[in-house]
Length: 72
Image (cartoon, rainbow, N blue to C red; front, side, top):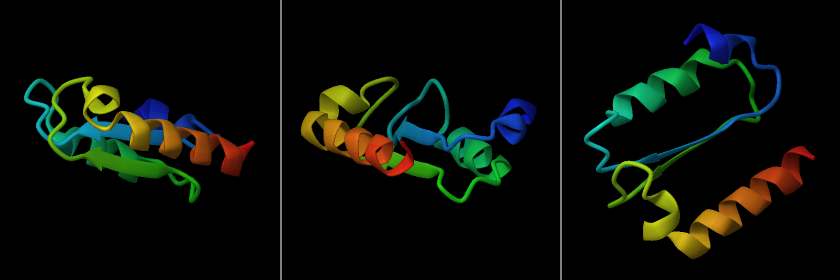
């Protein structure tokens, strides 16, 4: 949590809605710790732990490219 507060570049938080190893609440708390207005949070429906790119492959790529286009 404290590390997120110190990061001064935008963060794209991606988390699976059905992640039973790391609860969704954890990524929500992490994203709230950051004060960067350019941060993004995406909770991927039906994705489990580290499955976002598998469950929503095209959307995953699109969102990451859009994020980098915006901040770079």
